[in-house]
Image (cartoon, rainbow, N blue to C red):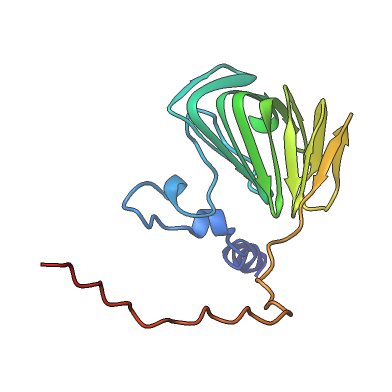
Length: 195
């Protein structure tokens, strides 16, 4: 009887989605949606995955350097740059990224760009420097440092210059009366030339 209960306990255990995933692209189960990555960067914690793409990835035990068309997706953030260094904590969970060259970040209606950015994955804070610019809705800002917090409306700009733009509006009809059209005159016949 005890053997039956023990066996029933193991058989009746729920199977995690990762183990139950089947390949949808003809690849391995690791390529299925929702499964951990076993690529060159190692396994990724899927509670809030950080997806990184690049033309070239060179990695070591605690960091990787990515170059060419680097794109990072984490929660609501889309981040692009020319070169990035990703830092890991065991077991290869991305904790921080440093981007250089043509940094462009978008989070909802907020945008930040500059020459360098540091992103802390745990806090969701992105700090952009190197002539940074930011936009939130119709407000444009530039300064020495832009700090953007993911999933919130919080945007900080140090030494800020702010430009408030009016949203484009539809043309309003003129309230004054239009000027009357010029009167048309009959064409004058040319004088007959003497013969």
